[in-house]
Length: 212
Image (cartoon, rainbow, N blue to C red; front, side, top):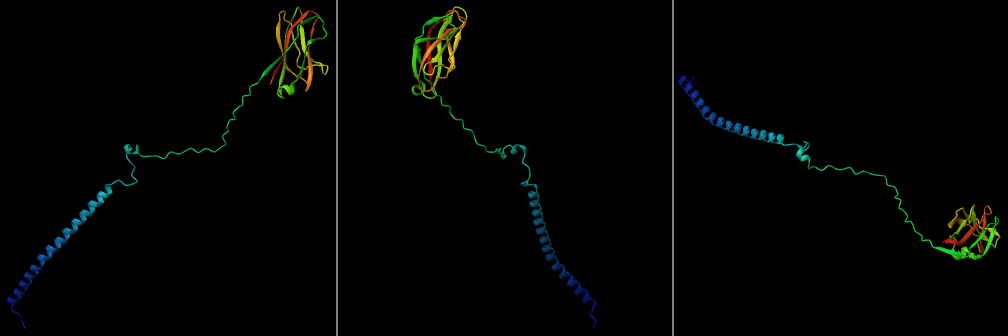
């Protein structure tokens, strides 16, 4: 069966009209979706740019900010060693005693002369302790030449080592010996003196000095 031409044209026109009617809403819907997508895309791009523009944690601080940053200071380590603690020195006060001897005489003999009036008993350890030191002192002079004086240990019959003193002064002079070595125990001591060249010599006084 054949369809008339006018009907065909009418159907085509109707289909086109329906197509246009349907296309317009679809086009509007498509446009709206595309526009919404572009807005979201634009917003995402903006966020990416903001994030990229922010300084990262590893970004070095400006110089003015670096002034306020704390830098750990390395503490020097030293090998521990014992500290020597100084021992306080103990100052021991010494005592000094003098034993005055009666010794005033003169001689021109080159041999040792005894001055018996000067005799005295001394027990050094018992009277003054183990650390006591003995010195001999005498005031003497000579007309010329040299005068010599010493302590004599009557108990043992010997001169006391270290007690010898002498002078060649023409006026009375006090002369001191070094440390005299007294024997232990209680011993009798006296003063002896002589002239070195037989010239006249004089002794005015004598003392035993004990430091303990």
